[in-house]
Every structure is written in structure tokens, then in C-alpha cells.
Amino acid sequence: MRNISKITTGTITIALALGLMGCSHTTSNNESIDGSEAKKELAIELKFLQNESERLINNDGKIEDKTFQSYKNDFNLLSASINSTSKVEAQSDSELKKSIAHLAKDLDTLTEKEYVKSYKKFNSSKTIYEVTLMNNMHDVIDATKTSEESSNVLDSFDDKHFHSSEAQIKKDVGPAIDHINTASKYKIELMQDEIQKHRDSFTKLQLEQLKKATHNFDLSLNDQIKSIQSYKPISGNYNISRNFRYNSYDKYTNACVYITDFESNLGIAKAGDF
Image (cartoon, rainbow, N blue to C red; front, side, top):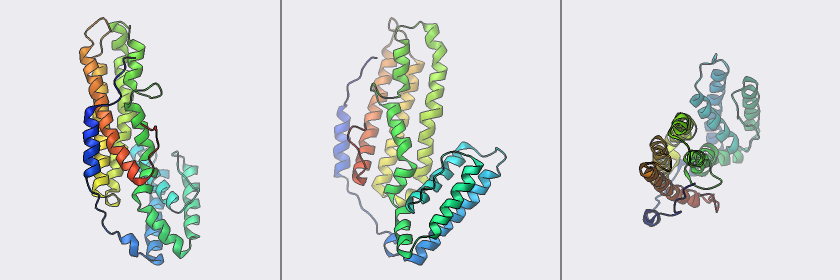
């Protein structure tokens, strides 16, 4: 593998700029909600999930994957908020029926104080991020970083074709790009949908960090695609592909500044994640 330096000078500048930016939290309606109001709001969410569950069960195979992924996130968000063990992972009619019944039962057993606590958790940026965004975000981080443990498609392509012929390289270009589009870039689309859906639960700074992080990860993947498209054997003109590789890594480091700052402020960043 042709390694790249681990840090860029632009990263420090962005980090300082983010550190100097204030974070103005607005007073949430969550602070004054009582038990009956919280119960009503959570019941509305449950009813929505029940209706969506029925739609998924009776879809005749016409529901797009994005629709199910959105339902899955909505369901697991409410479940996590009320500390239920009910989860949705796969689009199975039996699982959908069982999970929604379990969730309804768990919601019905809450006390007045638990309804308030659950409602606040349901609208918490920390809960929303951890349940609906974090797994995909870290999958995309792995898909854009350069390391021995990463799942960077460009690095794998480079390892395989470092001494390949033009014909061998050409044969694998399409599948490599398809993988980037259908895996990593698709996950970015899912995250952008969730960020938009829950935009009112994030502060202005949090929204900026999430949007800039996903945008830069997307740009990084675009440069991976361009590098693969222009890839040449080591004996040929490798400069164009190499420059796109450097650009991809720069975009990755920029994105990591935003998401590291975001996760650190929520108290969920882990050392060595990036």
C-alpha cells in the first residue's frame, strides 16, 4: 500500500475554529412537560410506528429499503428512550409484529415520572445520534480512513492491483466503484435523511458539525472513486490517481474534526476511533 501522512495542516485550523465557536442552546419545551403530556406524545409516536409496521407487513414487496431503515431507526429510538429490550433489525413480518406488541406493552407500564424521563430522552440529541446515526457514521469513517484495519475500498484496490496489468485493473474498476456507492455512499444518504428528520433536536452548531462531517466524508468517497477510475499500474502514470488519493484523505481528516468535536461534546467519543 502507498501510505499517506496521518495529519494535514488544515485540520488544526478547523479544530481551532470549531473550538472558538460558541454553542447557544435554546431552552427546550422538554423542561416543562408533565407526565400526562409526555405520555400523550409518546403514545402518538407509538401509534405512528404501529401504522408503519402494518404498512411494512402488508407491502407486497413494494417498500424500498430506505423506508424500512427509517422505520427501524424510529422504532429503536423509541425503544431505547423507554428502556425497552424490543428491537427491530430485519424486515421480517413475524419480527415486526412481535416487536411492536412488545414495545406497546413496555410503554404502557411506565410511571408518570418515567414518561417524562423517556420523552426527554426521546428528543435528546445524544440518544438520537447513538441510535440512528452513530453506527453508520463509524462505518463511513472506516470506509474513508487509511489504515491496516480499515475497509477502505481504494486501499484494497491498490493492494490488489499494485503490479496488475491495465486489463486486470479495468476489470475490477466497476465492482469497486459499485461497492463504494451501494455501501458507504448509501449510508451517508441514510444519515443525511436522519439529520434532516431530527434537525429540531440538534443545536445549530451540532447540525453544522453533522452536515459538514457527512459532506466531507462524501467528498472523500468521491475522490476514492476518481482515484480508482484513473488508476494505472506502478509502471504507468500513477500521479493522477495518487493526487485523488491525497485529496480523499484530506477530506477524511476534515470530516473527522467535525465529528470528533460533535461526539466529544456529547461525551461519547472514544480514543482511537479515528
